[in-house]
Length: 267
Length: 257
Image (tube, rainbow over all chains, first blue to last red; front, top):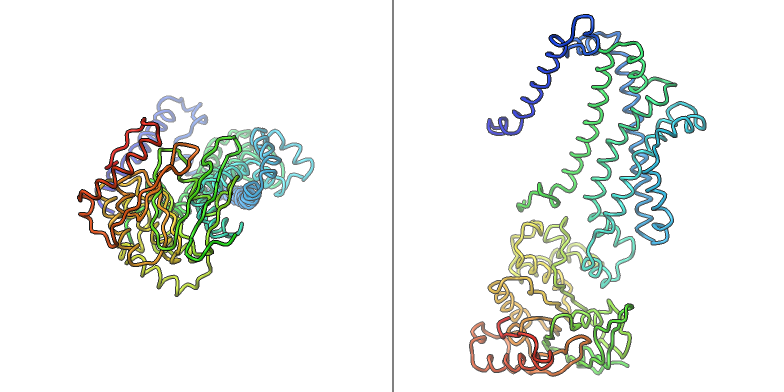
């Protein structure tokens, strides 16, 4: 990496981070009196108490693992289900007409309000958490798939019609590839929503094996601010990781031909 | 009704009315013989593209009969309609793929047609890396892979600049001279029509029907400077006059348009 890249790409966010941490220290050490410092302990205290102390670290990492599992399983189920539903809608107008309104409805419903109901039906374990996550992450996959599959232009469809391409051939050779950009964007949104669903859903469940959400609620109740901030930070990192992983997938699959970042040079 | 041997396509009293009631073409009669290069010119929206869609079977006629001799069909659209995720080679082999031609044979033909349209060396490029002219060459190559006997071209060079267009016209003449296909070529340009065709058919405004035709007697291959001969000018102005009459004297048709 050249010095210029270092300066233009990495320096600005690094400066912003330094300013942010400086402000944090300012509030913790200068603005707050010693007896009110528990409201916002300084960054080094958060790292020391939440991450370096093995007694506190162990439940945090277990909670992170659980929430990450819920997010991943929920995301995968939402992806498979969403692509299947979106594809079915693209194949027959009557399927789209009968299902799409309910997909929109699902998107409008505050799923978290249903947490008690879902817990009542499916207990407060992993299954319920995954169900909440799926419900929250599903819509962007459906709409991304449907919109993407309908994005091929008429000329390209005509071309396949002239050669009597079957429905499957049309899907495989034309519709799925042209759907990729919209589909992957939908998946990226779904991945971040899955993390939200896993963490916030957990917070609302308040029962069962503690994930990040239950821990956050517990630390808040006990005024353990270092652990509370540490848990929140881990939840943020989980979301960023989900977003970035999908970003890598997008670059790997459509980076060569789609969007402003496309590398058009012949290889 | 089977068409006689040398007739590639015969349209008799053909009409095409859309569901909303607008008629694209009405009472259209046209016969094209094997080995002819027929251009269709007419005012915007006169049903020229519809004519090609009717011949190709993409749309059904709502009146009259469309008879096309059983043959391999090539269709080049206004837009290159290349698939952006495929390289030029993969784009050009698409139709051969759909027709189930084995991979080795496909690749052999692709190399051949890329050479024919002057895209050798660009096989691994994606469409976005190509200029408009090169994309259209790739689109032509894609059709040529199947060695069409009847070639339908829908204003393929309409979006290109004048210079590129003339070069592609020259190459189109060379292709037509070397390969034994029959062409039905839709265009806005009178000069292009006269330069390429053995016969120019003029359509009326919508709903389109044939209002006249001009036979172009120049032998193939045709050199580029043919465009500047007095005879070429005379033929072009006859087509222009027909267009002007067809359009009720309103349109501003110029020979170079």
